[in-house]
Length: 597
Ligand code: GDP
Image (cartoon, rainbow, N blue to C red; front, side):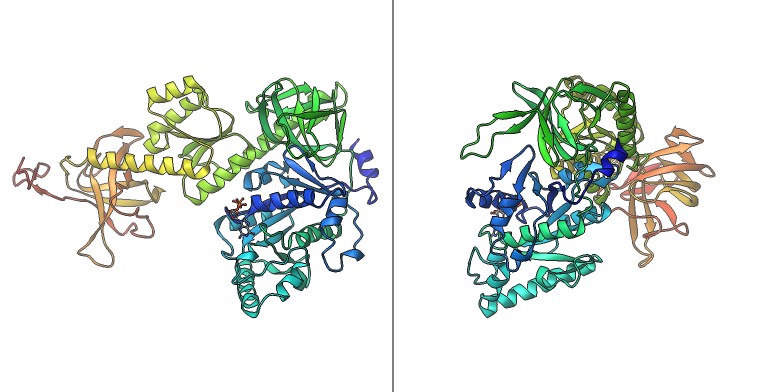
């Protein structure tokens, strides 16, 4: 079937290109999408744009209308039937459009605020686009905010810029140069689209304003011409099905439905579809109906869908069927054309999921992470990696009792990691109850930053507790020699093997090292939170013993790192603060302030 589909592909039958919008928060991604849609409606009757499921279909007639103002466009032959622009901008929906490691997004728009240049999430998006080898154009947005900008919509943006006053042009040039420089720092060539020497090696910048609409025609024209010149082969329509689940949604009256982007091939009512589920298995079900919204009207009535017998790529469509509750967004849909294909499809979707999850590198110690879709999981993991929060387990789907049990075993190893970060997923009631009993923390949010804030606040609280608990503990003096071959974790918590050279080391002992720069100063490493001797947990260890200790940063100074702030040449010393050694007995100490023995 595959070979036949391949044979029948032709340049005379192209499909719509799938376009995603990415970029830093507040750069105008949503506004650009709105503008592309609204302008199209305003552009009048010429080929009405259609609102689809999860995406907007901008047909080529409409693009022709919108790009009339673009200089030189009349020589362009439009060959693709249009653009299918994904409605939700951002990292997660881009990641959900995946197929065996590559992306189903044909071309992306990376939005950069001309006033701010490249920002943190711009760079994240850039790395994602590079990793998936997805071509993109840059919308250099908010040009209307340049000094003294005068708006002249319905003109080619090149003419609009050259008609601005000298100061405005100056500012435009300076800021653009700055952005180009920032791209160069990321190892990429970039140029204004009309100065681009080679669109294959230089990223094009299109100045736009999503508020005034200036440059939007140029942006559309560039997307179409780039798609046609660079992706003609990729955009040849194929009967081989390529469809991905964008979102799983419960809809009143329809039950659980899935929103999917059909990138190639066709789906028909009654088709037997096979998809991966969050329990690691698969479901086989028949398409009950293929739904799309009513054609765009002034007021769109919610849940007012039209049923289709067949949908042909590329389009966004909602599938209603039985048993869709556990389907995972971000994975492919397969259609079994005959009963004997069902088993093959099942195997394939399960393998697909295992492969995607298998790519994720887990740590021995770390929080547990759960998310609603593969795309949102990846977005969260990316963020945790940047924030240096390790994760030991990942899952797609709601938090159930089994997940809490898993987290509780982490709790034994390290308090702060007995935590589940639940990103945009439900927590079952009995799971929450069990978590409360066992002391497992579950943080739930649908914004990454909120999860991060909750977790860091919790970690801080644990450190405070540790500090409090150990405030009144008498500190026994000790001197420990580091065994460099047994450094298991070099930084917060420090986990390493040591020999007790002198004294006694106890759980609760604050540890410091002599500063290299100023020997009269000591660097606090933290507090010994556990000691292991011969794989057994102990409370104390005396002179001569070799033990493994864990030192947790107590939060009163920045975490110190083995290899950077200190090394094996340094002795670890107990930090004896307000305590003095007893005259009579080496290990008996006295609090100088309260004078209590
Ligand atoms: P997103 O977070 O990237 O989706 O950004 P939004 O589309 O929500 O835009 C963020 C803010 O910037 C909103 O207040 C928009 O009105 C504003 N904005 C977006 N595009 C432009 C633009 O081209 N010019 C100006 N002046 N403001 C813009």
